[in-house]
Length: 232
Image 1 (cartoon, rainbow, N blue to C red):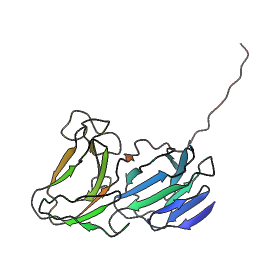
Image 2: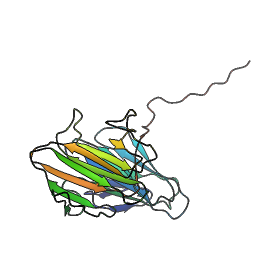
Image 3: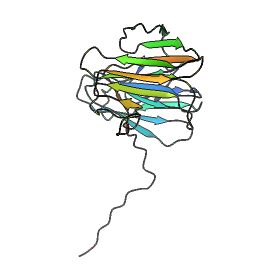
Image 4: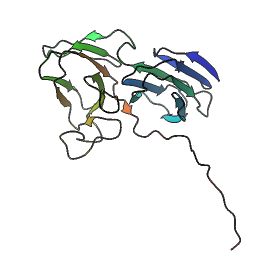
């Protein structure tokens, strides 16, 4: 397994390659990945951080949009290995968060709409009063956004994933149905707003097209399975 030093910039991992980030942020970070094989190959990444057991991230075949994982790895290292079964299964990876990725565009606080393209990063300085962050899809297609800012919760996280035109319908705060794991909220409509008062602080917004959020991360087995054979 060949290991590449990684600073979070977009890169492609060939099968049997791994990327190592020596130290993550001590705050929320967004990991994006996408199987870019043109063959019908299911992809798989193994993720480790610190002394953790491997977590396996499935990268579906023929995907045209990314999958994201939001987490706070608490300044530990982060290692990603492409362990796909077929060796012709490159997987694109990138990390997003304050200080990571391409330079952000400015998000004005005047309410003016800012068009975004895939992997757009917007940055704003909030004011010490209630504000509303709004998302608007201009079609019926799925739109996945994530934003980072404000105080951290009890787990050290301050990142939120919002999906518009979502197959999950209306979920999350203000709705009867909890949001799926990994999401803050989803809506079946083409708009969503988030009200907050963080004082004067930085806000970062990211757009991931019609991507999805990792909702289940299987861990390595800690107890070996068993087989029995008995005469009846």
